[in-house]
Length: 171
Image: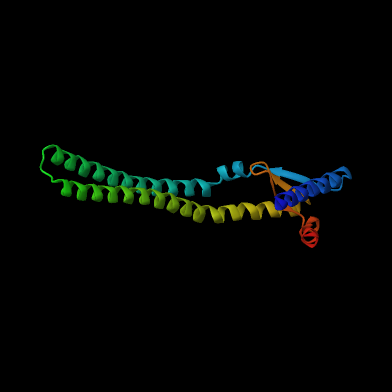
């Protein structure tokens, strides 16, 4: 709770400082929409296409695993109905089916993780490129701060305006 109050106090202080600087007319602020910028980049479209290919491959593999499980379940169910399986055999087959089901669930989690890792791998250099461009524009345009409408965060700030060390000293 104490940390939350410190963060709120820090945010209020930053807003106060920014508002004060804007009032004296010396601070130039800018904003952008990084989501719109990213959506227009050919690198993002290529990354999305790569991700879609990977997702389709993994999805097909997962669907095959589910089909195999369903086929085995139906085969065992028919044998049980026909009385061709002893209770001990039925229990053993149910364990095998449960193992297959567990494997499918693990595959699903692994697939999601693999897609997230690939997305990060593909997007990291693109995002870095955009951030570098924002910094260049910020410096060239003499902006003191640049806000992102997508994240409502500051994406560039003149280092002279950085109060991090002052805040650290107060903690």
